[in-house]
Image (cartoon, rainbow, N blue to C red; front, side, top):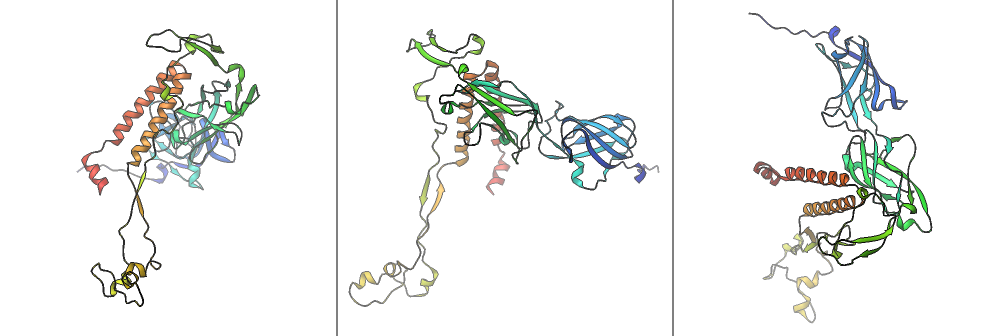
Length: 398
């Protein structure tokens, strides 16, 4: 009978002997750290001189390093971390590089150090949408660039305004591969008699709190000339559809950029944490007698009998009175009286509502709509995540 045969041979196996970023490295001394569109040069044997027959991927998801030129011994490609048809490549994470020559197979990474066969994408800030604003903050700052979605996601990004000792965090609104947006913090308490104040902006990203690369230091200038104030509002009591006139300074002239919100008195000045922390109830442990005492004769209560001399024998010879300074005090055990995870979810929901209100109050209608859509998507994902099958619940119980 006819048989199919497959032949494996050294001469048919591609071999990679060196790998380096030839254009756009993050650090010249570390050849595998680079940015979006960095040029990667791979040297070895067994490659195809036809560019499209060489596939170079980065990471487990298979992000392409697009081959621009190819020979039998050298490949040149450009890193594409956000192709659009898949999840973006996470930055600040060592990702395995794989070379596959069609009709031959994967190449052997014959390098002196296995880490040399990995690529680490670094974030880069290219521009910001605003560089100045009101002392009261509230504007949406957008930092644009590449590789801005680090390992750890949104929770691993921190934007800080100010010098050490007078720093404030810019509340993160959204984090994507090509931008980070946050809510400019209020610096009024540091204003004093100053008219303007320029503060540095620093970013910490990823689990190691690394800094992105910037063309120049990032700064933001707080200006009194951009601080809006409200002096009067008439009428002071309103119902639905009542026309209201507000007077003040720096209120702007472009209607598209002005938004006015009504807020009940009970919600004004609401603290960030209005949900009380779960209380713990003390559940005392049942009193336990040390095994040593159980070897003696006991009374009707199961406690040892003592022989005593002198007066007040009834009280003086009771076991509890005799050993009150001998046995250690029973340690109480505490247990949670409410579902702690549900409490944390409520806190997160309250924070989301506060940030959403501030964005819709100070940002554009597009920012507000995008924020509401983002919240809706997150809530749907959270509901799907919390739903579990009967088998899942049984497994968790066990």
